[in-house]
Amino acid sequence: MTTFGESHGKAIGCVLDGVPAGLEIDEAFIQSELDRRRPGKNAYATARKEPDSVEILSGVFEGKSTGTPIAMVIFNTNQKSKDYGNIKDLFRPGHADFTYWEKYGIRDYRGGGRSSARETAARVAAGAVAKLMLREIGMKVESGIFKIGDVEARKYDFDYARNSEIFALDSSMEQAQKDTVLRAKEAHDSIGGAALVRATGVPVGLGEPIYYKLDAVLAEAMMGINAVKGVEIGEGIHSAELLGSENNDEMTHEGFLSHHAGGILGGISSGDTLDIKVYFKPTPSIFKPMQTLDIHGAEVTCELKGRHDPCVAIRGSVVAEAMAALVLADMLLLNMGRKMEQVRRAYAQ
Ligand SMILES: Cc1cc2nc3c(=O)[nH]c(=O)nc-3n(C[C@H](O)[C@H](O)[C@H](O)COP(=O)(O)O)c2cc1C
Ligand SMILES: C=C(O[C@@H]1CC(C(=O)O)=C[C@@H](OP(=O)(O)O)[C@H]1O)C(=O)O
Image 1: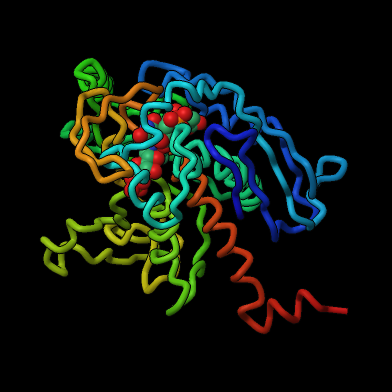
Image 2: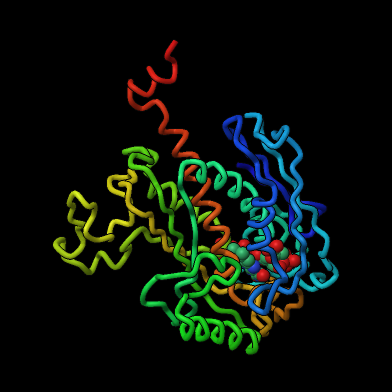
């Protein structure tokens, strides 16, 4: 996948290459995935209202993939770029303004340009196609928010079906998480959070033993999402506190007796459910005055306008799902023909 476009430009989109021919492309499903990530839906998201209607430009004929690049476009409709005039010459603390300016010497300051997570809509469109492919072989990728600020769900048991309201299932926990977001928002501030991405139906054998380990590739894909600051697989950093006897997943004919490895051993999927925790920092653009520098090097106060998410983890979790689906789809294709019997079968006369 490659993406293009800026937050306040004409459009954003993606080109997805390598999709096998003959995959049924359910456009309604792709749109429904975009609707889950779409901004402007509720009090927990940025107020920027974008329909995020996706249009397929190529690679699909009579409802099926043709094996050629699938290009998709989403037009921007609600930029309100005037609100960003006051950040033209200054660097928002915590955002990419400073580094883009230093690196390129030119910056589309309207809503962060290319550094805005508006771009992630295109990833969700591509991820939806990957999900369609995974679906055909019984794989599913879902996510839920397990932590907002210090409000953390103890058991990660989400109602994935309510996928536009992705908080913990436990209703008192969900309320506490929602209250935490609204409190931060009312204080003109923002709050961090974390999502659990879960893939089920994953076959044994995805991921390469050394250079393209499944956990390494997933971590790179997750860290490539705006505002992601940490990724854990399975027990993750907590495993550093455990004894081997506590952390090992013992095996029986019924399967693994526990789930600390998170579905990956030696960089290769074990056939167990895949568990990836993705940690998002708080939204950098907040409505409290902050000290910063301008492009001339003067110390100035940054007072922001514009429309921003109070907690990026909520919509970010949908992006994390898309990235996981893309990685898994890649790994499925990479895993073809790794045994001579598969090669013989594929080329049998
Ligand atoms: C779904 C999503 C929505 C986001 N919304 C905002 C936002 O409204 N305002 C903002 O300042 N940052 C937002 N961010 C985060 C910035 O895009 C990100 O912090 C910025 O590009 C700097 O990159 P870094 O945090 O990875 O260093 C969002 C991130 C995601 C994943
Ligand atoms: C528009 C979206 O989210 C945006 C992500 C974002 C950022 O800095 O990441 C900043 C805000 O928009 P703008 O680029 O206009 O400042 C958010 O509204 C979207 O997700 O579709």
